[in-house]
Length: 245
Image 1 (cartoon, helix red, strand yellow):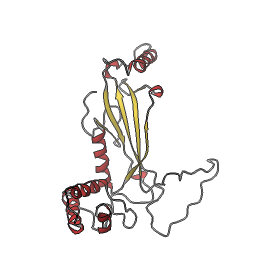
Image 2 (cartoon, rainbow, N blue to C red):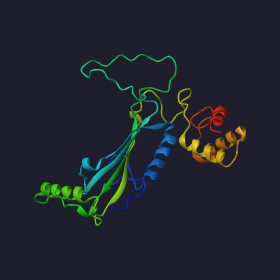
Image 3 (tube, helix red, strand yellow):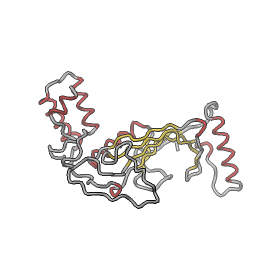
Image 4 (tube, rainbow, N blue to C red):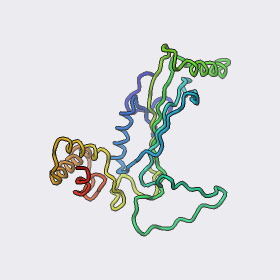
């Protein structure tokens, strides 16, 4: 369990929307690729670390114990903003939704991506179908919780479990197509590249725009059909570029 193929599913899960990574950096790179492929943007809506006294020992399908150390949730930017949770009584019928006349980025989309930092303990894998399996798991769980921070002999394996939404999880907007007039936030890879070339001393807006446009076509969408220049997710306006100078 110490080696996991980059971006692969493990024997723990069979769902195609779940991938495993050996580092948070690689998981985030997959997030960025997903945003490019779907032409959607995701933003962090929740980030939580598990307190040491509240850690629960879980067991995977291979009977290997593990902790969930950190949880990060990224929501589609077409979803509701913070503080807009529906506080209606769940016993009441859902409120009637009215058709929007003016285009807006918020479409009540509930699609999200999650990343969980997981620490596994392969040395404590137990054989299935053995006697007193439940009791043995309890003893191992107690031992791990007691010795996690003090016993240096514990063999640990850190992995990052990432879940992705299905196409049907997105609501109120199309994915993989240009969202004309709806999404205005710049793709994070494009923004990163823009900041890098600005840091090199280039302050000419026309030149910066030309470099960014070339990066989108020749790097982000290499060997693929790039979005049209009207897509503001990938092609910043002069005003957007100027705001970063």
